[in-house]
Image (cartoon, rainbow, N blue to C red; front, side, top):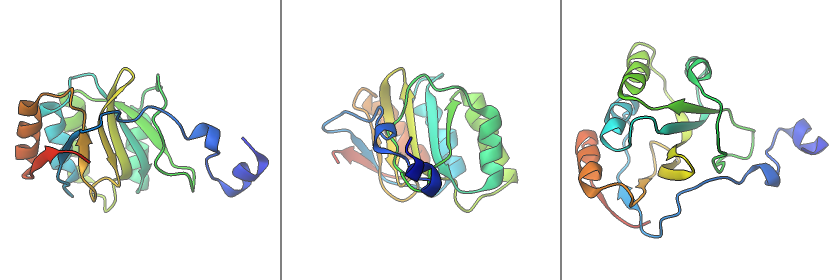
Length: 163
């Protein structure tokens, strides 16, 4: 890391890479602004034990919760924020863990949850969501359409194919 990046607080180019969604025509799911509904629907889409990656959380109580629940990452996820250097948390997704996080947010609301949110398993990104809660959610085609349909239905949104 260069002296300038430490002073200014940006992420140097060599630290920005990582795994990302590789599908040429992923599932595209319309966005939602309902964080707790999204968290509760994740178990309909991705396998238990997948890892959620939360980047650039917006509020101190959210960061504190995720810091306590975070696991040491086995892989690096491609950053979406290069300045200022974002906080990043890798969180094991189980139905219970996602529900606990949603319950925490029900009792401790936040105006801004995170800037970017991805879900991966091993070295494969299953869900990629830059500009989370604004832009569309992109889901790997390795996920069965029935699961994508159930997920979209639980969110009350539509889905299709492609960027």
